[in-house]
Image 1 (cartoon, rainbow, N blue to C red):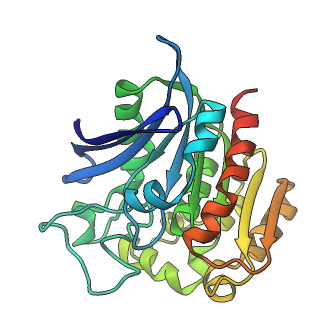
Image 2: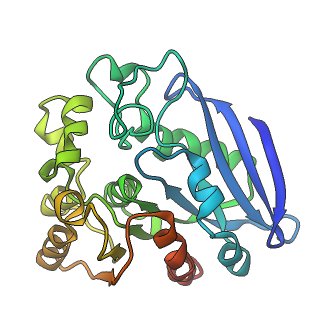
Length: 276
């Protein structure tokens, strides 16, 4: 693991790191914020998955999470959203390929060689972070924004017991039912079962469960009606008996101005569950 940069912030260290990923076959960059702590102590960790077009840098620069993490003693990890590099296939569009890995392990060529973000964020990176940082692996939670909200929800639903809390900002809750779900068609082909394993609403319908969910959604979000459709998640949770706190935020859009406004509240919610 190579240290790209470190800086002091809110009584802790914000670092950016790079390593060669076995999952993606590329160099991957991620950020980690570690609050100051007693020697030998381990800390809870919050995983944050970013949305379409983003790298680790968007939330690191604009997410405004460090004060809350320092207050609660939380490590905050932000991976990239896709493999990078000249050898990685791409397309001239913003909602597919580079910057849009959708947190799946692609099975269709040419994407299957490098686009293995599911294995990266649920297996390889957690192992690396646990080896290099003072993480308490028994106290993990996960959150995300938009495509990253989709990734956070599916990761929690498919790994019951791993994460003590899961939340999202404006998540894609049912990609198989919205236009952005074309990415699953292209990464996974016509394997309906595989696509359902990467769809939070479908997972709940198929029996996956979490203890509770928290979602913040801007009412002025331009993607709300066509792509996000939080009402589908509400219906699935109601049918399954999963407590869902869906907070519709009047006047807020899809941007990091929205995310940063409510980041502290979501981290307070995570901290309460990570400290139990």
